[in-house]
Image (tube, rainbow, N blue to C red; front, side, top):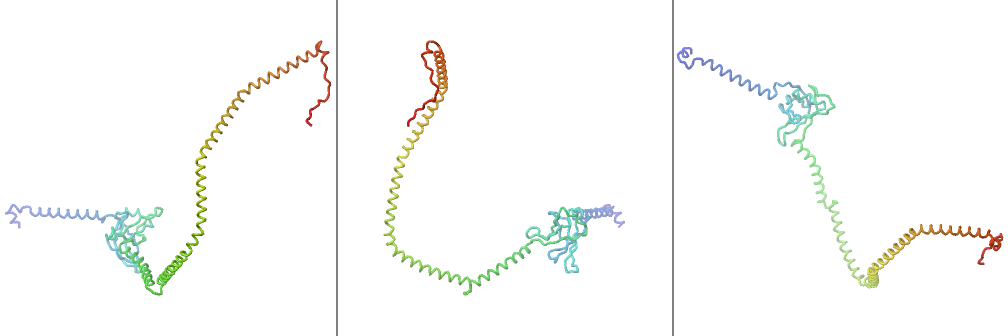
Length: 315
């Protein structure tokens, strides 16, 4: 090899070149594995959380555990305990473990309608303490297609049983349905006969009833005609009467306003006239008193005697 290398310049340093190439390949592969491990969370610190279920059906190792749609861990172990129950271990990343509470619940669901199964974790109550590593939480199965089909089957079976029972009763000649239909058929036939008898009876009664009712109808018709004529006359005369009454009331209103205005205007004049009359009477009384005490009228006027005043009587 050394002899070949010494003689051929192309192979000089070949070992070093191959070694560098292999080293670069190993470094590249290692970096890819490292990045893949980081992306997969292999180097992320995790804690174990457990749950117990009656059956491990549809649960498998490596199943993702999600919270609000984000992956927070995976199922790392699934085994049967001493009570014949399935115990599953979940590896939850520590940064997400602080978001879960003691009453958190993990549910088995499907991604979409026919997607792969996942474990969906609920956060729990805010007033509860934070979930600790190694704790066991509650598990429940969600409503996948199989669960929906089972629920639908459980609900349909009782209804189908009732339908079958009803069909048997309908087909049974001695059943309630058949007897009810027979009673209805008999009742319908009896009603037809009753109607025929009533029609026959009405045909006999029509003539006598019409003869008795016709005079009463004529009387009612005449009364209605008279009432209609009276209403027509009232409709013709009533507007004129109303207009006359309105005119009379308007004249009375104007007359009362005129009288009131005349009284208001003459009241001050009447007051002055009464005052002047009283003054004139007082002056006349004073003149007469003075004249009666002066000569020569003093001896001509007799002083009236004092006594009771005689009152006139109509008796």
